[in-house]
Image (cartoon, rainbow, N blue to C red; front, side):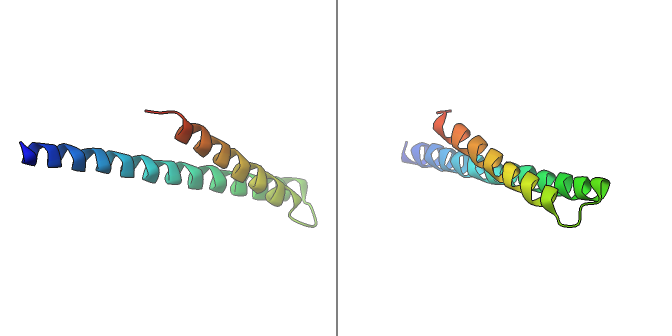
Length: 76
């Protein structure tokens, strides 16, 4: 009986860990997409300074934080 309880507890801890790893991966992907989109926009509009790269990257960071908080507040 104790073995079964320990196994189920370990599985639930692993699932919680994987949830946070997935969330971190999603945040990284969102931020990288924003950075590359901003860099592309800077090249397309031939700006002298990386205004689009900075702006879109910052928006991507805020969006990824919002997404993370939204996901963490929802009980699954």
